[in-house]
Length: 92
View 1 (cartoon, helix red, strand yellow):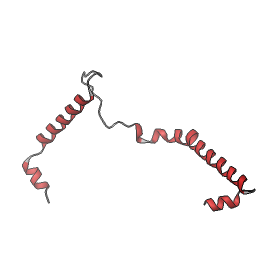
View 2 (cartoon, one colour):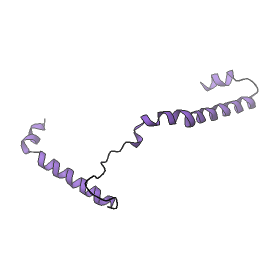
View 3 (tube, helix red, strand yellow):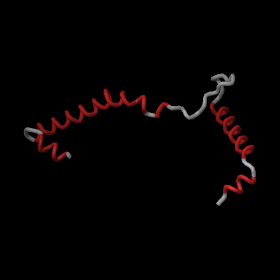
View 4 (cartoon, rainbow, N blue to C red):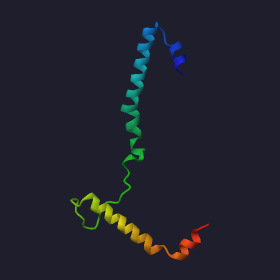
């Protein structure tokens, strides 16, 4: 790919190097100024995976308290839904 580009560009090696640099800068600018902003709404980077509290909790609660609360509630859910017969039947 690069050899073919080098052969196609006109001029001496210094001019070819300058043209390659200009092409690379143009490609990067195209990506950052046009392509990435166009596809950003379709990318999952801003999708939250943690539910926000909606039951009267203030935003001043510590993160560790929220983590421990969600961990305890998920453990309680798992403990209450798993019965020994369902666990035994799930084994191969």
